Amino acid sequence: MITYIPILAVLLIFFLAGLRVANQFERAVVFRLGKLRGTRGPGLYWLIPLLEWQTMVDLRTITASVQQQETITRDNVPVKITAVVWYSTVDPVRAVVDVRDVDGAVIQVALTTLRNIMGRHSLDEILKEQEHLAVAMRLAIDGATEPWGVKVTRVEMRNVEIPESMQRAMAQEAEALREKRARIIKAEAELEAAVKLKEAACLIMEHPAGLELRRMQMITEVGAEQNTTTIIMMPSEFVSMARGIGELAASQRRT
Image 1 (tube, rainbow, N blue to C red):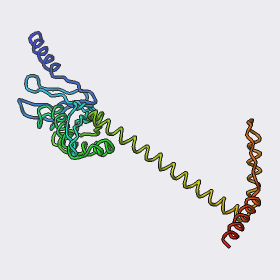
Image 2 (cartoon, rainbow, N blue to C red):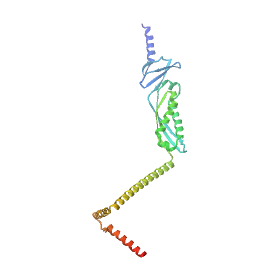
Image 3 (spheres, rainbow, N blue to C red):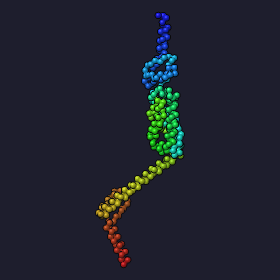
Image 4 (tube, helix red, strand yellow):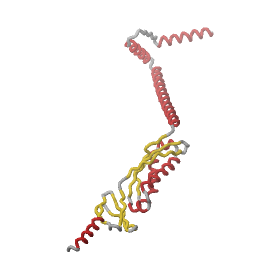
């Protein structure tokens, strides 16, 4: 029994040296003498010491910031754009075997895709349709990274910088549009007021007594104010009589 104790100790150490634990969000890609043997985990598993080794892959979603890129839009405007990419590994074997640095590869694909897509659109489209452009970028990046076992779930443009001269031009354009809308609204209000005045005039012509009531109301409103203004309003009959006398005198002079 004494001679077996060292052997048992060596076997125990050999067994314990091969024990590994993988978290729920991790997978171990196992190689035996350089040949792929598959994946292990999550939980407890055993590797043959000195013959098998592993590469741990994280399956959680990774948020990567794409460094600021300066590109030229379709209408020849230089812009600087910063984007953010969310992706995760869905096939640990391909992520380890088919690409050397999967994180760096995803970032490089995002950089080239960002420059290509922004170059095919104008500045107005980039500023107004960022959601559609983000979807197009996600599909393009996901199609390029799919052979590596990576799934791109979301892409967002975090910041879009344009030259100061273009900012001033856009501010002037926005101010001109606001002034245009203000003038249109004012013209529509004047047109509506003119229509109402026309309707009121037609109604007064049908009922002349309404004009006298309006005059009395105006005198009442002026009298309610604390001022020294005195208004003398002649009835419409006097105006009509004066007009008739003028016309009669003109006809007599002609005769």
